Picture 1 (cartoon, helix red, strand yellow):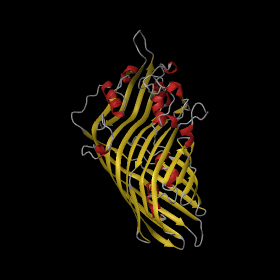
Picture 2 (tube, rainbow, N blue to C red; picture 1 turned 60 degrees about the vertical axis):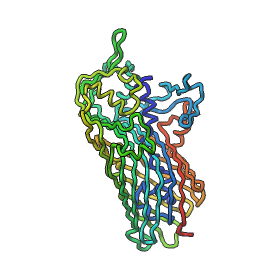
Picture 3 (cartoon, rainbow, N blue to C red; picture 1 turned 60 degrees about the horizontal axis):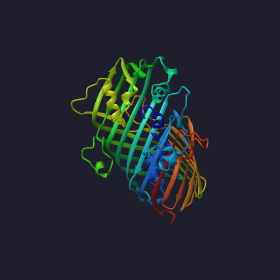
Picture 4 (spheres, rainbow, N blue to C red; picture 1 turned 45 degrees about the vertical axis):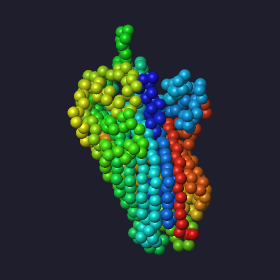
Length: 475
């Protein structure tokens, strides 16, 4: 199977992106969410009901795109858990993923896809005193891959392995898109404190400072691409993508080539990236005296900053370049770095003699939250996240989203139902709490949908974690 043939499934399974799951919406909107609320807005920690909150670990995988829908005869849950029936596998056990397992969404709109995996490591949140504020120490590992702003005509040509006769000899001009990946770890310190407390009105502020360690990054920011898809002629010729002009920036690292991201790698002194980041936020709590209900508003900017990487950097400005299917028909074109090398060589760009430095930004976003707590057990939250990165930034992005999350929660059990609008689609999620365990999805139908049950998902997500709040204020 060639690289271009599995572009469709890759766009879907990139999930990522980026997409709501990286926000753990069924968990981060709960007043009992502890450190997970801090990731959404550091000021929200000032209202924590716990004296201590310990996060032992939480993991998440998210997929989202607006180019293809998943229509395989088995669900993504079956795929992720390795339970695909033998009749859908090759003789060597590999999954036989047919082209018609995905269907295109052809609406003339730019196409985006996101892969977002996140591991939230050990973390501790401490209430220093009734007026001294709340301190949070946290760690996490993030891996993100995104395609943004790609034209559906270009993706259709690649998805068909350049064999779409309806696209032959049709010029396409001024294509602009970005491909970005980033894998990095962070250690963070966060502090939140109530600044004003007058007659049931509390104004709080919060700040998080992060040290970042980068392991892999790639960026291809295309400022203009003109091309024509040509039919092959002759016995041994192939259809080709003929690029009449391309103007782009290409940069990538090679640190993780032929190397797994394990503990030894995470602690390596040769990791190519370093940086700093920050979150800042405000929170306003309205809680009338002797009332069980409360209303809270939050505003924050998260993931300010970025990382500087050592790697290969190129200015791509070429004309009249021909790409054929066979250029990617190799087992050596299986990662961003390997594909970037193939493209670089095809464009005739010589490798840099020495590593250069390039910078990638964090997925900066403006976060607005509103929460109404009806009584100690029932509440509803609204979350609006707005991407703040420009189209030509060498950066992964927080997809803009709007979510409403009703919940019912006691000290030992709870349930939340996130309803999210993202990437011009609606996702329905479900989250459960059972003692210290949290399990959920911000796109449950995407996890269960397949060609057999009529659900046509554009992605999915799933998360789980173990955490414990200790010594509540009302005990």
